[in-house]
Image 1 (cartoon, rainbow, N blue to C red):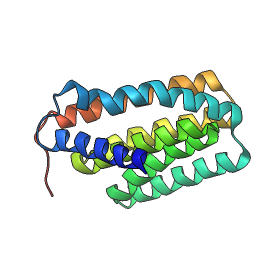
Image 2 (cartoon, helix red, strand yellow):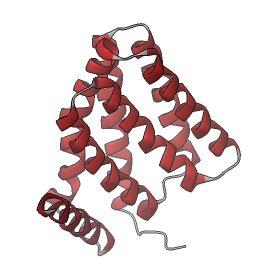
Image 3 (cartoon, one colour):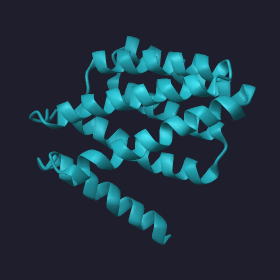
Image 4 (tube, rainbow, N blue to C red):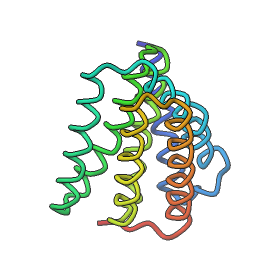
Length: 171
């Protein structure tokens, strides 16, 4: 229970820093970003090596659901599916400890997306990267999966960082 409480506290602290204009804090900017750039390319590589047909089907279903939500302009659902996709990649990697870390990082990222409200163009980029990643995982190309994920995570990090530096949109 202590670990969950600590994780919740860190998540709230990170969001408070974003919400109250402290997004220029190096801690707030680097926490999810640096964790993701270290973790997610490795998870993508391992997913390409260890995935089952069921894992691949899960990734494809989440991707389709995300695409459908984007077509219907339901951005909150889009954000949720974008994050679920990354969690499914982690699950396909088959490393329980890294899955736990990815789940936490993803929850912070989802909250950040709800706060910053990236637009449709952002999600189009995300869907494109996810489609390429599915191909690399399907074809069991670990190096390709790693590179696609690294490029994707870096691009998303830069985009969200730019959004955080602009006045937040409260809807």
